[in-house]
Structure formats: C-alpha cells, structure tokens
Image 1 (cartoon, protein in one colour):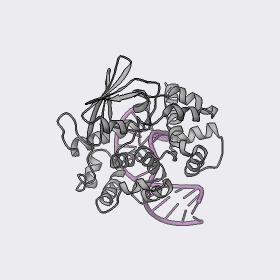
Image 2: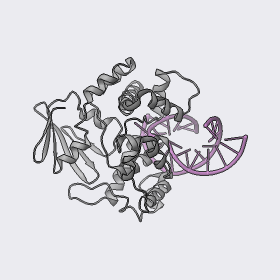
Image 3: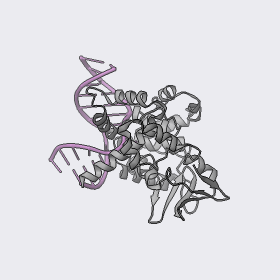
Image 4: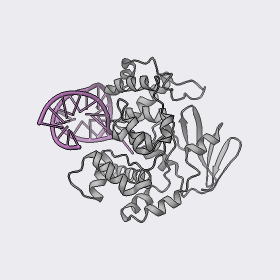
Length: 281
DNA sequence: TTCCAGGAGGGGG
DNA sequence: CCCCCTCATGGA
C-alpha cells in the first residue's frame, strides 16, 4: 500500500486497493456521509474528510494515525485478493469490489451499531444511529462523537424506542448496563475467535451474526464469516447445500476460508447486494 | 396487504 | 441440538 502521512493528512497514491465507494457502501459501517466530491467520516470521537485529488485520495484529519489504523492501511490487500482469486467464484466479486478494506472500528460503536442492525435495513439503521449520536454524542462543534457506553448509562428503553430502535431497545439497555458493570470488551482482543465469540454471545441482542460482525469489523478477527440473509443466498448459489442452518452455514464458510473468511465475506456480500438491487430495478 | 431488512430471544421438542 | 414463533418499524 503506497501512502504517506503528513501533519494533518494521509495521501494514498495507489487506489487499486482503496476505493471510497467500496469501503463505505459495502455495509460494514453506518456512520458516514457521502457528498459529490467527498466523504465525511466520524468514528468514535474522531472526524475525517476524504476526497480525490490528482489521482490520490487525501484523508484529512486532526488524528491521521487513528485513521491509518481505521482504514487498515498497513495491510496488504493485493496479496489477500490474490489468495482469494484461487476460488473461481470469488473473481467477479473481487473485480466488482477490489477497493474494499475491512475497517478497524471502535468496539463499543461496532457492538451497539450491530445490535441495532439486527433484522433491520441499512437506511433505517443509519437513521437510528444518527439520532443516537445527535442526542447523546459529545459535541465537537462541527460533529458529534458516537456516545460511549458510559455516556449512555442512564438511557431508558423509552429513549431507544423514541429514536426508532423498536424491540431492540431493551437489548441496548441491558447490554449497556453490562458494559458499565465489568464486561470488558478490550479484554477480548487477546482471546481467540471462538472464545471471544462465546463471551459476546452473553450480551443481550448479540447472536452469532451480530457477534461475528463485531469480531470482524471491531476486533479485525478475519477468521469469522458473518452470515446474514444475503450471504445465505450466496451460500446456496455457490455451494448448493441443502439443510444447513444459518449457524451451520457460518461455520462451514469460516472453515472453508479460514483466516481469509472476513475478506471473502465482504467481497461476496457487497457484490451480491449490489447486483440484486440492480436487477430489482 | 404482505413481505423484507446485515436476527435474536424464548419456548418446546 | 433442532424447529417455531414473536419481536418494532418503514419502505416496496
């Protein structure tokens, strides 16, 4: 990955493995704003602007080192795509979404966001999260941070229903209470995926799918394969195995792709969702 | 009107 | 372990 860090910006010269549209439209993150010429991103309590300039992407931020990690810039996606290309059914998806990257998101933000995501659609997930940040996030002038679990400690079930969380409101209240009474998300970084998942599953509103999203998009544990309704369609198209539950599909896929599971999942998910939506119109 | 969306909890077998 | 039902909400 060819990039350089200056005082308040990162300049990315090689865009073959870095596409703003691929990174943000692939459903791994909900808090971003796309404009004609730029993207604005808020992660945790950090803000950055990304835009094209002379065939480079400029990431402008007061904390470029945070976003160097966030965008996983030290990772070699060319090598990853090369390994995945040995699976012939991966090639269309990789060609379609070659500029994807797996973001390294804040743990609390990923957990709360993906609890909200359950059995929900992306526009409404974004709306709920934006309302949550508008009402409870710390004000930095031109943007608001994602509220910490501590800042959400007094929020009631009614509050979460008011911002549209629906029946997930009580999951959020319960999980936030756990986060404020000893449940240590950071501790799970050192556990292997299976153990970390087992811990996350103790939280209300966290099943296999939500846990795997937090493990992948927060902890960057790339040996798990979040399996939602879209991926289940892909699973049937590619492997055509009858009688697998969603959980069994996730286990099969994560064994099949091993440490490349998370990357494969994102290429396949984004490609499947975009082509399906396209065909629907 | 019914179905679907990055599913999970709870009961029962 | 499995299957089955219910859980808000809003757009198509």
